[in-house]
Length: 387
Image 1 (tube, rainbow, N blue to C red):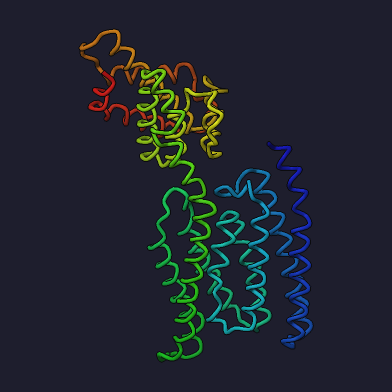
Image 2: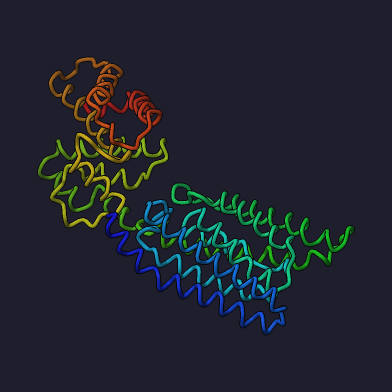
């Protein structure tokens, strides 16, 4: 994987170089049209070119270290397509009033298709373009830097909880406050309603553009595998139906394991769909007709190949759920109707995991491990279904 990343990173040079050339040439050409003084224009061009080069270098390092958000490591050129579109938008903003730049979108877009640090750096570099071309002041730069950074913080981690109402409202309100402080008040200590026309229009346009951007993001990233999960996580899926008909005992254990994977995944904030899928199919290694999403495949392969030394915390959840279900089901089968001290069984299972070092190479924290143990103890009523 590391070698593949390094190989692909070299292929990013044409995209990086294209952005550098377009940024520098576009700045110089439009600056001449706007009759910007040559010394100021040259300084702006150099700043933009160096800033874009640093952004490219930073993006490359984040990619090689596996620090990009969401599934952006699988679609690295998507960031540069967004960068090109945002560069074009920055050129257009150079001909608009400072209070009318929809630059909040640039910050959010670059962060969603890269990561937070890359989005903050890239958007801040692009912000130099309209500030230079439009003759803006430091106030204009600070206005969008603060509101953009605030929006990035609000819109992080959308893959686990795609609720955008409050982040969108707070981002736009922050933009209005910053425009009032940095644009409206400096122009007139006693502003009137007319001075809020451009900021108001900018808020509306920015909100519409952000909604469109987030819809695109949700369809291409957050919910790209939704339909697949609906199919494979259905108990009437062909592979599960076949298992039910051939070995009902194994089928019921996969159902119980998937239940615990889902419950624990929701409580710990893990990828619930992927965990549930792994719970259903972890006993069906030869089930190649199912095309599972990458996140589910990663859990399953880690479980199948590293059963005693798993690497991922989601796999640890699967191992614990499978072990608890197997242990309690086995005890029920050996002594039907006998009373079982579930707390004692679960404590013994988890202490055994610690003693054997089953998760020493795993990225699960001790807090998550102990919370998972508590969740199993809270499910005493469910264990009656294992009888």
